[in-house]
Length: 204
Image (cartoon, rainbow, N blue to C red):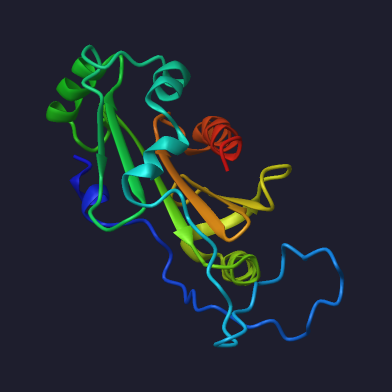
């Protein structure tokens, strides 16, 4: 059922080109919000991203996932998958009453509720903090993917989309996008998405 989520990355269509620092930083302490400039090329140096490829799944470890959602791997048919050449992690698992939900879905698809839960985590690497901040502000201004609701005290800025049940938060040169389809009500997914973000932030 969630093949459509696995076949498409959840990344926002944004330009992530690096920008050069318009003014030299004269302070002896580097400003982390400003890019480091390569003296040979004059271009901003992209910061490293340790969450590439399958490492995106480590932002929420298997143990943390099982504990947070009370999942047992075999009982709940829990799966973890990644996308080739993408910083993307997809988890799916059965809900406790999935059999009843599947019967209802067969009888009346219009009123049925999904028997399977889904969690997708994607790392958007913008290279430098200043570019990430610019893109984050653009997402907020233009309500990209329905990101309209600010979430306070989470990373360096966070937004929630009720349209897509997605949480986006920023940390340094990275933005992490979390899509959660677990509770039957979209807004009930937000507290759990925030808990996932907090666990991820502890590792970043």
